[in-house]
Image 1 (tube, rainbow, N blue to C red):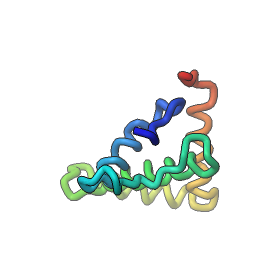
Image 2 (spheres, helix red, strand yellow):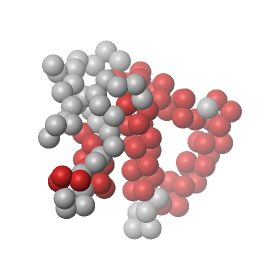
Image 3 (cartoon, helix red, strand yellow):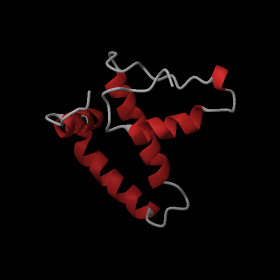
Image 4 (cartoon, rainbow, N blue to C red):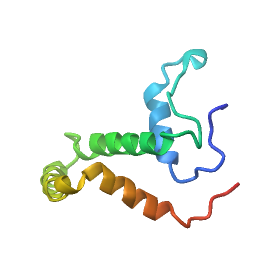
Length: 104
């Protein structure tokens, strides 16, 4: 795959979900729309996709804990809304990955 990453070994689940979402059976026309590794905006793109896929799984009608998840997420959203929810998530993500050894 010409678009595989060389240094990001933490977002494999996001990459997998996006590949499954965008593959339509024709490898030549396959476009994941991923920004290249290290390109400005890639980190934000991955955060947005992580939120999209987590939301789809957690709020799915087959999730037995769906109502609990929705109640708790509404509470958390209201608590963090004044602080900029997405900014808080991005900052948290940066703190978690800071200092991790990245394979080269």
